[in-house]
Image 1 (cartoon, rainbow, N blue to C red):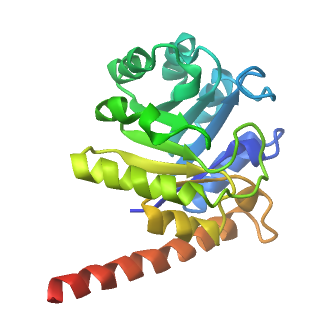
Image 2: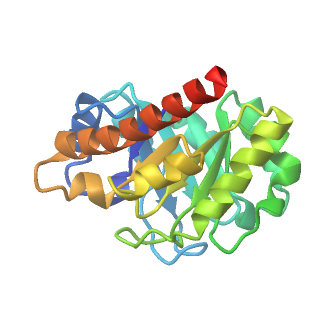
Length: 234
């Protein structure tokens, strides 16, 4: 099942609560928090206080993406704030396995992200710990970037590796996601789609943007069903 994760990075920073409510009412299953520290990536965004402030306003899955150095120092803060899932970057963790294990110990869905230049092999040996693998389809740090199409091969390779080993790991993509690129990523094996600019800058509003993504992904679901039916008939 494909799920939409609006990224608050592209929302009006003065109207986060309204944006959170509108996203859920528009049909989004997730709410994505891009937490940046000014070190791992150039910008500084927001911290656990925002997660805590919005927790009472939305029952969506709070998908916290830590683009920060030493993320292990902040896990407990985000757990207490109400995060449902916490994703850390392989490139930012000195002891990646230990950090991921701590997220699991805290009872949260455990995710690991890799940047465009980072090979899939960087996370191969921690896949058994993961609930989520986030494949960045832009270089992290700024919204509004163009989707890097060569990442589709990485998504395909990740899907094959996960399925071959029977790991219960979902693949999320983040960066340049819209009604044109989402179906490409879905066909490659992605299941969760982080979208910022497309959703919060859509001329017809948040709900229309979410529905345009869902409609584009429905065509992929139909194609897969027809393919599976054809294979079964043979």
